[in-house]
Every structure is written in structure tokens, then in C-alpha cells.
Length: 289
Image 1 (cartoon, rainbow, N blue to C red):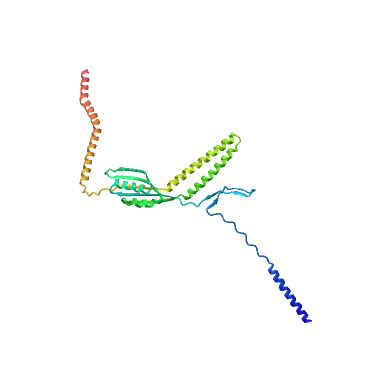
Image 2: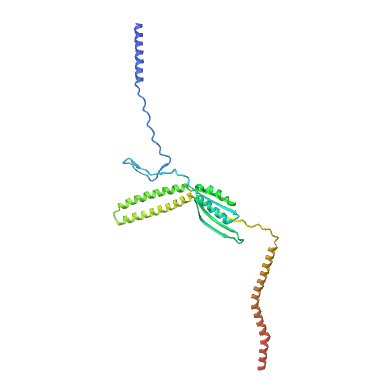
């Protein structure tokens, strides 16, 4: 009897073991996670005024490339003392022309001591800005130098975006103009088109100005000849000062005479009347009496 019970228990254990293996083999693997959607490129931004059609499931996005190179306006100014103004100015112009630049403005003059001076405004390509300055410094003795760079990248990108949006607005207004039904609507839409076109032209003019300043750096150069060094005991200056003082005294004396002559004439006239005419008048008066 005990042997029979042991056999039954053994068979039951074998059956449970096989059923457990079957269940373990029947377990299906978990599905792999769905791939994440690709992120938007970092250099692309969606405009705030983007229109999305929900019903149709499509979207009209306006992307702007913000991966723009840095926009810098370079300027420099130098004051240089030279021995020969004409030779130095010729060398300056040669440097500018060799760098594919040009002289946008120049002004020269002669001082009271007979020395020549001049101011030049140069425009050179930005990539040759530093090399041109190094060459200019070799012309003479640099007395002062100043360089600066103005970052206009943010303004440049903003202008591009505003032009793009204005052009889209203009295109939309032109489409509305084609659908106008009467003269009033046509005039209103045309007036709005003119306004938008004016904004586009204004923004375009500003961005053209920035592009010109960015592509061509501005260098202001002042050249002047060296003042001669002279040693003097001051005798010549003393004679000059004495002569100027003498001239001043004579000038003052002449002015004094100009003021005194009318007064002397009046005084003399009064004395003549008192000493000459009054006695005669008195004498005539007595005779009559």
C-alpha cells in the first residue's frame, strides 16, 4: 500500500514538472518599444505665427535657419607722425589698393608752419583688416591707435526674419486682392500692400547697410609731418613782443586822439564864444543904452 502511494506521488511530481516547463516555453516575448520620433534640428525654429490645419492632419511650418555666422563691424583709427607727407600718403594708398580696398574720403591741408597734414578714410575687406593695419603702422611713428568690433548678429537675424514675415504677409495680401469683390475692398487691400512693401524696403535698406559694413572694415588714418625742433634764446621772440607792444601803444594813442579831437573842438568853440563874442556883444549893448 505504501509503495502504491509513493508511486502516485512520484507520478504527480513528474506531471507538475512537465506542465511547468510547458508553461514557461509558451510565454511570448515582450514587444520592443516603439522608436522615438526624431527631434527637430537645432538650427531650425518654428515661427510663432505658424498655421496648422487640425482637421486635415497637415501642418504648414515656416522654418528659419538661425545657424548664421557671427556678423561683426570692424573699425580702427590711427594717428601717425611721418617725415614726408606726400610719400607717406602715396604708400598708404598703395597698401589699400593692394588689399582690394579703396579710399572713401580724404582731406589734406598745410599748417601755419608750412607742414602738411591729412585725414583718410579707408575701406578694406574684413579678412584683410588686421594685415592692412600692420602695414599702415610701418609708414611712420604711430602716436595713437584704436580698434573696435560691433557685433550685429542679433540685429541681422532679426531683420532677416522680419523681411521673411513681411514678404509672406505681402503674398497673402496679393491673394486677398485677387478675391476682392468691390472697389472699397480693393483700395483697402492695396493700401495695406503699400504699407507692407514700405516696411520691406526699409528693412532691406538697413540689412544692405549692415552687410556693406560687415564685408568692408573702416580704417581712419591721420598723417602729419613732424614739427621741426628748434633751440632759441628767445631774443627774436622778445623783439617781436616789443614791436607788438609798440604797435599797440601807437594804436591806443591814435584811438585816444580820435576821442579827444571832438572834445577839444567843442572846448575851443566855447572859449572863443566866451572870450571874443561875449565882450563885443556887451559893448554893443552899452552903446545902444
